[in-house]
Length: 148
View 1: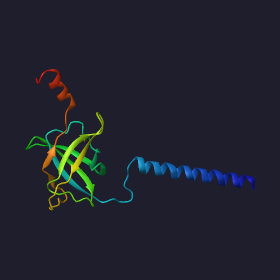
View 2: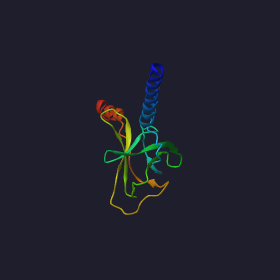
View 3: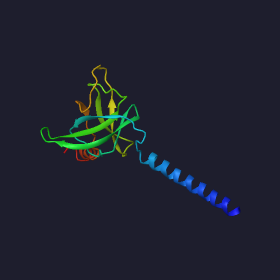
């Protein structure tokens, strides 16, 4: 009797540990096991210095998506960034996509600033209004070397 209650308590403890690890894996890995719906948009930037695949996409400081690909558009010689945003978000054709930095030297992310247009972008459309990343090293170099 004593052995059965000990085995039962160990089993419950192990089961609780497995549930805790699974919960942490889902939350820390930011897996979408509950099936959030997304759609893809693109934006063309002159420079995406420091932006990585997996970077956040935000509107008003709230995460609404992630960067899924960064490619070079060989026609325009500009960076073409593909990102996914939640289906509920209606991105209009006059939205401005900016590459920003979290803090002074933090991670880069894409900030979407909504416009006032009523025309909503569809799957695969390109945001035309963009602001590239500010290169801190370039700014310091201009200041230190007097604009060289």
